[in-house]
Structures are given as C-alpha cells and as structure tokens.
Length: 277
Image (cartoon, rainbow, N blue to C red; front, side):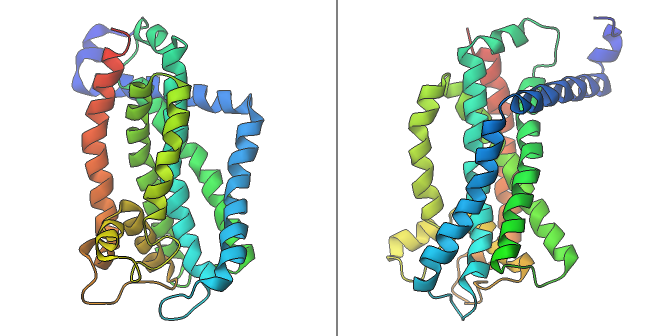
C-alpha cells in the first residue's frame, strides 16, 4: 500500500509489481507442499515406478526401431508423459483455491491480477526440477544415458521444462473452469489416452493410419522425439515420409509451447478475473 501509484501504473512498475507478487505466491505454494510431505514422496516415487514398470516389465516384449535398448528408447517418452500429466497438479491446486474461497480473498487484496496464476505455474516449474532429476537419476541406474554430450543434454532438459511451464498455464485455466477438486479428479482419466496415443512407449508405424496421424501430431510425440534427438537415444525419426513434428521435433515443441502460452495466459487471466462473479 505504500508503493507510489505512479510507479505502479507505469509499464515497468506494473511488471515489477506482478513479478514481486508472483514470487510471493510461489513461496506460498512451496510452503504448502512442505506441510504435505506425502505429496512430495508420491511425486518422487511415481517416476521410479514408471521406469521399473515399463522398462523391465514391458521392455522385453517391445522391439526398438533400428535396434537398441528399450529403456533408452523409453526414457524420453517417460519424460514427456510426466511433463504432460504434471498439469494435473496445477489444475487441482487452482480448483482447490477456488472452491475454498482463496481466490476471492486474493481478488480483494491490492495485488497484481496475473500474480496468482503466475505463482501457481512458477511453483509447478520449480517443483518439476527435483522430479525431473529423480527420474533422470532412476534412468541412469536403469541403463539410460545421454550420448550427445552435456550441451545437447542440457538443451533437452530445458526444452522439457519449457513444455511443462507452458502446459501448466493450460492446467491453471482448466482448474479455474473446474472450480472444485472433485471435477478435476474426474478429468484425470482423460489424460491417459493422450499420453498413450503417442510414440512415447511404442513406435507409431504399426498403428492404423488414422491413429498414426493423431499420434504423429500429438505434442507428447513431438516432445518425446525432441528428447530422443537431443539425448541421442534410439527411435529418432529418419524416414522421408515422417510427419513434420517428428521430422523437426525441437521446432515443433517450441511452437507448441509458444501457442499454449499465447492462448492460455490471457484465458487464465480472464477466467481468474471472472471467477466468483
């Protein structure tokens, strides 16, 4: 309340105001997780379970295109799947704050309107870092490793985090629309077909033509292919008839991420302002 109003109304002042309030809410979300250690343990255990389940139980029965170890083929797909399903956490937290009246409290306070969704999405990105590290560590123990050197590997992880951040805005918008945690829980099974209809676990060559088209243009497939390319893992597309997102996966992920941000940042802000009216 002591901030000069002229400074707040200037473009740079509004940006600083939004960033400062957003960081405060990032700290709120991280503090809430510290009070619920069970969620952290479950989130860290999930990647380990997925690596063991798919890598060792299903791995011996699935051939890798062009040869190679299935667990090295699998890990980029698991990175992409966990990145996509992580938006469920943002959905749940946004819906919980809406149903409990927290959003109404925030709107009554002198804070930047974009700060609330910025805090939720920023916190989710920070939460994703240790989860990604846990999955990468499990993959290394299972025999996976990047083969193209440290710089492409870092680029691969940065691309995964960019996709997670863009998807978190979609999750924030859907959470505001859902308004309660029960509705979000009912939407969770809808994410499974999207992640499974991709090249994350099996090649798309054996799918029916219509299903292969959907799989090849699935953003999960683009992120998986980009990770395989940057990590140097088996399964990189080389055919001249490959769909554009799989032939240029890094560019496809960047375009998907930009499109998600352009669409869902204003939609989320609009939904936040209208919630409770």
